[in-house]
Amino acid sequence: MILFRGACMRLLAAVFLLLVAGHAWAAGGVHLILSEAGGAYAETEASFRDALGDGRQVKTWVLDTLTSADLQVLSEQDQLLVPVGMKAARALAAQYSGRADVLVLLLPRSAAAELAWRVPVPDLAYLYLDQPPARSVHLIRAALPQARRVGVLLSDENSELAAAIESAASSQGMTAMIRLLRGGEALGPALREVLEDSDVLLLVPDARALPPSHLSVVLLAAYRQRVPTVGFSPAQVKSGAVLGVFSSPGHIGRQGAALTKRWMQAGRLPESQSAASFAVDINSNVARSLGLALPSVSELAQRIGAHLP
Image (cartoon, rainbow, N blue to C red; front, side, top):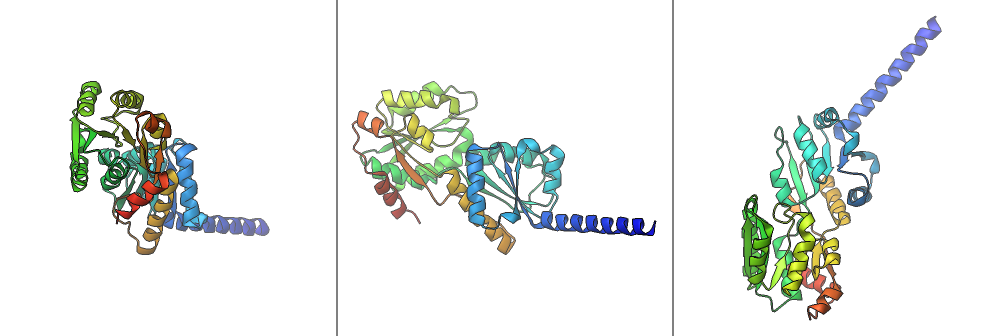
């Protein structure tokens, strides 16, 4: 009986130590919350872990494995939550109830503005998927030096971005022909209006103005008008944009890890920002069909980098 009681006490002590150790890890850990398994989310996770170095500090969750209660518990600890993608960010914002700091990855600036956090987050930062307007404008200047009018379609909630694009275009001697679409307004007439007044069409991540399901229609309409399109993803270039500048999930993951290291060291996140690293892609077939002689990918990337801080 005494031996049995001693064994029970030792077992209880071991369980207690495990709970304490688990709580200590949870209170200082980093939790990646992926919108989905695989794809861009898995690529972001892999580059994040590789750049952070010490994978023991990171726990990865896939959103559909977490309940609302799980998200609430995670948000009540002194730790860093890193939702990756819109679905994970929206779910966490709806259930957030406490003390955790939050770094959101792989999210367009316009989508970040729409997130409604249930309670204020002590320290919240976004690493935007969008390219800074200056980077996109410098690409247009380097690739299409004759272009003077840059067409852009935006939702009316994106007036701040519209002003930034106008300023960036003006600094390069160009005019931004921005069309703001109001809720429920048809895309077709607005697109025709922009294409008639533009030398190049710049696409930006704004799902209200340009739903992904309408991308092929926009690219075809621009091609028929012989207006080259500049995209923000490799998929858009492959689908018919003449060129594009983008930050890959790998770029986002590595920079997210760098921001996380700063959080670990200083206890604070840096301000929200766009990805510093980027890549350029060209659709040579579309360029040739439009009669465009473009510099090489490496030359364009060099020219853009030379004009950015």
